Structure formats: C-alpha cells, structure tokens
Length: 351
Image (tube, rainbow, N blue to C red; front, top):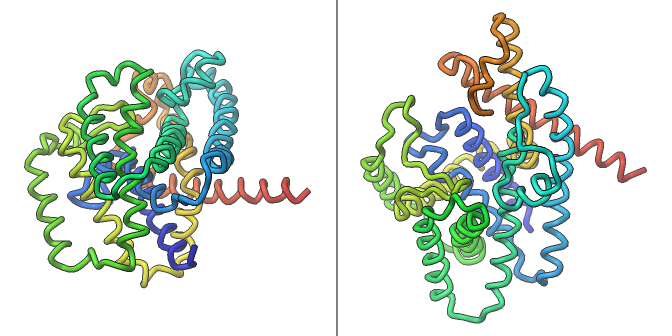
C-alpha cells in the first residue's frame, strides 16, 4: 500500500467518521447530502477499497477476527461494566437483559445488546459481508455480470425490508445490500483510482444536480422531522430502494471528491489523520462522551436525570445551542481516547 493511498484512506475514513457523528447529532457537515443517506455504507465502500483478493478465505477470517471481532467483544465487555455501573446513577439500564445469547449472538443479528455501543452494530455486519464477498469471489464470471449481480442483490435486499423485523433475516438484508458497495470500493481502487478521472467538472456538476433532483423526494424538510433522503441500513428499512442506492452513490462520490480536493492542502494535518486512524474508537466511544456531556449539563442545571429515561440513547440537552459543542468535544475526546488505548496496547504487547 503506497503512503499516498494510505493517507487518502485515512482522510476518507476521517470524513466518513465526521459524517456519522454529525448524523447522530442530526445535522449534516456536507450540505445537500444528509448523513443517513450514505454514512454507514461509505465504510463498506472503504472496506472494498482495502480488500485484498490474495488472502485465502481462512486468512481473511483470521485477519478480520483480529481487527474487527476481537476489539468488538473487548469493547462489549468494557461497556457491559460501564452500563452496570451507571445504571443506579441514571436510573436505567441502557441495554438488553444480560445473558449469553444477548452478549454473543445478538451482536451478529442486530448489534444493539448495549445502547452505548450500538453504533458498532456495523462491525459484525461488515465481518459477515466480507466473508460472503470472499465466497462469491471464488465464482469465475465476467466482471460486468458480477457487477450486475451485486447490484441486483442490493436492489432485492432493499425490497425485502418488510421482513427486516425478523432478526434472523435482518443480517442478510444488511449484508446483501452492502456487498454491492464493497465491490464498488474494490472496483474503484483497482480499476478507477489514478486511472480514470471521475472528478472532472461536468461529472461533479452532474452529481450535484442529481442530488438536487433527489432532494425533491425529500419529505423531511424540517429538522424537527428528520434529516431527509435517509434509509436505515441498521434496521433494514430502505423506504425507496432505488433512492437508497442512488443517495448512497452520490454520497460516496461527494466524499471522494472532497478528499481529492482537500488532500493536497491538509495532507500534513496530523489531527485529521488521527481521526481516520481512530475511527473504530470514535465509533465505539462517542455516545459515551455525548451522555457524559448530557448528564453533566443536567446536573449543572439542576434537572433530574430521569428526564432522559423516556428517550433513547441519542437524546441530548438543548440541541439548538449545544449540537456543535457535542460534536467538537466528542471528536476530540474519542480521538485521544483511541490514542491512549493504542498506547496502552503497545505497552502490554511490548512487555
């Protein structure tokens, strides 16, 4: 992997992470491109860019268990302790009842066994998707036909959202929708990047114009009603299958374009690299930071903690005034928490 590619991937991961965190605070850092229209699928695209077809199936499993699944369950253990510890203070247990099924199996079905790490639901989903993608890679077919098959998978999966309430079917809906974008990332890295200029002015203007047309389908014009053009991959709810695929594509394109534009000017900005390098830790920890901020503000204002217990884990205090405070503090805190955890890991490994 070249240093330039590695750095651009860090920038892309950083931008993707900023989009996710902004989405959880219900605002968009990219005007016209609402986070929930592409935020999570962008990580599957990045996984496709990083996919190494030379790995055997066994080697891929081994590597992804090490990089995805083991850190996931380590975080689950940590957050199970945190959730138990804070329950008496906040007056609510933020999660499902504790048992082996909920802590070991549910992560691969819904990933919502513990509210505070619910954003990590996509990690087991990504693991499953990559395994399926590797299995299909052994089938020797024409590349255009393969592309078409994966697109059909995405469309069919998006049309199966009526079955998504069944948690045994949900993982397949999510993975078969996402597999198309993993393949798209693989194609982009191996067939397009540095070979075909997809950022010429005409194409950029065309994508922005298309997004403006797609906005006509947006029924959520008021921030109070949502952020519009969205679909919920986490729960397999797509609302309009073609719109979900189109907004995923336009969202991926615009983030690639932004990275292409800003990289020459910000390539030496260390903190931006750190965001990309700590995307796993930011995803895992930002809800904890948000809730610490919320309960601190409630305490300072003399408001009982149980006011939050009728809302979900994403509820935060006075959004009109505090949204960007949550965003900035959340990003900075989780980046350096990630750096601290990596430092501790290095010390343990060294010993």
